[in-house]
Length: 169
Image (cartoon, rainbow, N blue to C red; front, top):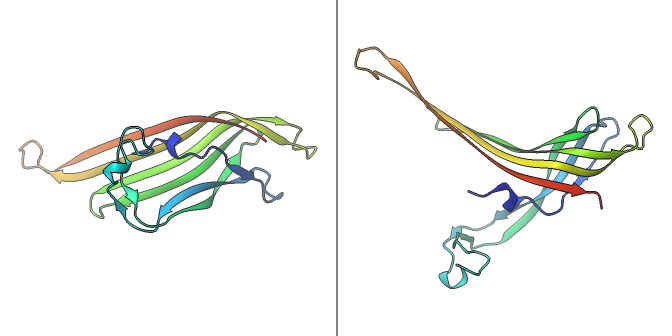
């Protein structure tokens, strides 16, 4: 598992692309993909004092960095934003499901006003990136020996959070 602060880039670019939608913006975030297979790291190049102290698996092909655009919304007052980084659903197709979501939010320090057309965000404060997972499975069975069918459910969730701040260059 990777902490959000380990993959969140040091700098991102936010763009407001369409004046018809004043509260919508896009953030371009780099992501890495391995065009090969993940293999065990060479013990001679990993361990304490290296860039791979835990000897995690490494890519044996080309590691490609691509920027992907993520959709965000500034609130009506122009004082905060929410940004969806990703979401997904998985299931075993029978009785179990998993939901994963990642989002960022922050308060905005601004100048100007939307009414005069000179609104400008100058910093992001109290920012937080959240990655959350929730899963559940459902079974039917006789749980107490009374020959009656009962539903048995098992669920779990986890959240990983990291803070951030930013200023306009």
